[in-house]
Amino acid sequence: MALDAVCLRAVAEELRGQLLGVRVDKVQQPAKDQVVLLLRGGLRLLLTAGNNPRIQITGRLRDNPTEPPMFCMLLRKHLVGGRIAALTQPGLERLVELEMDVTDDFGRPGKRTLVLEAMGRNSNVILLDGEGRIVECLRRVDADMSVRRPVLPGLFYQYPPAMEKTSLLEAEEDDFFSLLAAANPERRLDEFLLDGYFGISPLLARELAFRTIGETDSRLFSLDAIGKRRFWEKIVEFQSDVKENVFTPFSVWRDGKPLEFSCFPIDQYGPAAESRIYSTFSDLLDDFYESRERQERIRQRGADLVRAATNARDRLRRKLAMQEKDYAATQDRDALRLSGELITANLYRMEKGQRKLVCENYYDEDREIEILLDPLLTPQENAAKYFKRYAKAKTAERYLKEQMEIARHDAAYLESVLEEIAEAETEQDFNDIRAELKDAGFLRQKGKEKRGIQRPAKPREFRTTAGLRVLVGRNNRQNDRLTHDADRRDIWLHTQKIHGSHVILRTDGAEPDRESIVEAAMLAAWYSQARESGNVPVDFTQVKNVKKPAGARPGMVIYTTCETVHITPEEETVKRLSV
Image 1 (tube, helix red, strand yellow):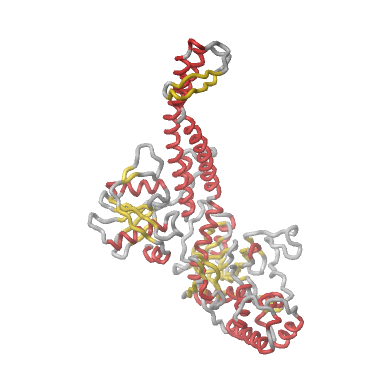
Image 2 (tube, one colour):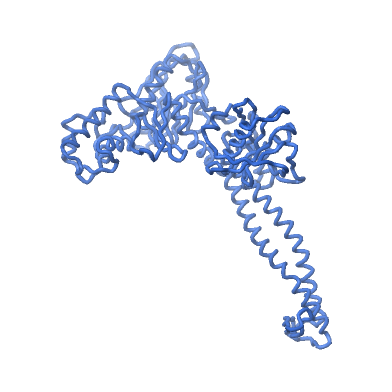
């Protein structure tokens, strides 16, 4: 769900106590719709104007482009060195204003305001000068896009047009019962609230309906006089909690995936979903949006990689199907040899122009065999043709067998690359995978590409309960390096016959405890295609037993004398082991 006006109020209230008076040290723009203010004291304030608009303190590190966008450069010019003087939310609108005290190049004091409009696809980040004029904005809106409210540099900033409905916080008893009496009795309770008031999300509307009557899809006609009174009382409780800033960072998860979040406890899902309460709204938003943003990064940054790897894999599959068909045809080659031998044995009774030969099969004397002939060829030439086809089929069998093995290995390699893309987290991860596909010949080199300076990607690092280091590869080339550089007595782990990362359990030459092996196996299962599965088989052995065949693709190894442990991946355990 999106951050509604009530939740935005709760977040703003939390941030106000953390941000006022704090200095802006740096400005970053890790994505086209994200701005990060690095504040004195190590705080990172994230403003997002994308599909999941919000403002929060974030603990997630985000990679930045090699060259900062122009909007980022302009924010640096105006905001670095400034102090946050106020954080406000006008009314119950989905926007937040960060007012800052700044000094210009000549040391003169001034004001700048950074506005986040958290309005779905129309979200925006706008920088205002001390007079309320727009300096620049993340998304420019000209007159062709909006006649009522253009958003362009030089114009005075205007709030979005006010809604004609009443804020639920300002709802009064008489008006509420009047609306209730005039409403269509077939309307659901939550639809009635959304039709008549603003400042409330569909989730909270359903929750108020649930608290009123115990169901989310009840109709107005089901309310008697007592029910209507209870409905109003629940709204009054809601108003009181919001006005007194009584908020709870609350999220709902189902099947290990984020479903909803709110600033109030949500009871409508009952035992069908898991409830989580957080210490801060910033922690809630980081946790809730982590998996969603990861998928969004894959969609945006890895789309070309997914497309290239998928197309190459599908081509290989089609090629392999044809090879298997041709290979099956070569298995009937003995019939070709037999035909050539029988023609040779019956040359004395054959004539040119004959279309078929019916003769005794000396391998099966009780049967006669019919052999088709080319009437334009002599009997000797027909026999030579069958022998030639036999020899060609024999050679083709050997060639096709080799090519099918190569195709199967390449298809398996591309499956592992697709798994890498699904697990990619940073810009460098995508760059490494892109380079890997180019080296393997599955992605074209587009001219002379400009390569920026980026910090080298490191493997994911974890530490077991016993304190042993665990390294998890991010891509196939890193998997190769991990295994190659590991001590021969370290433990190597990988999901059995399932694509995933190579995992190295550092032992420092000692015998690892069983719990450390199980925890490392948990990481191997989590960073594999079997993440959502249960009872996943994970093989483990010493690194000395792992070999890379000559000429094999990156990440492809063989190993012997392994043991197997069965693991059900758990996200909480993975987070606990993270360094």
